[in-house]
Length: 172
Image (cartoon, rainbow, N blue to C red; front, side, top):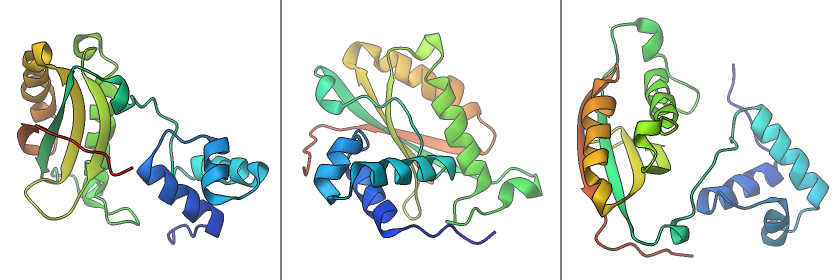
């Protein structure tokens, strides 16, 4: 199946959401100037094509007292040939599966004090997936447990590295 082509309005919406995923229809209208009904239809089409998803996202400004952690995940394809297939944008199917499993783990009670901010499937560097997580200093042990007992045990994960931000500055 050929890659989906986006309308000009859909492209503008995606560009805005990449900067701030919390924008609603009204905020997108203010940013790109398209009519609200056009934006709502484009959002509906993007969701139906799985180009964007509705997800609970915690705003970083609401997380005073939390530290931002980066979990770098190096992956390797499992032995199954179907897992090695590429999606239209170059991501590997097994990497998407790993991200879906990690996202689902944040709903488990044992990890309730960790807040998933974002996940990125990347090229270059030492990681294939970068996970951004917020946690309080007193929950660092929980973060360690999450990485060691959950992430590292996922099929396709070869190694992990964790770092935390000493300073973060928004470009907005």
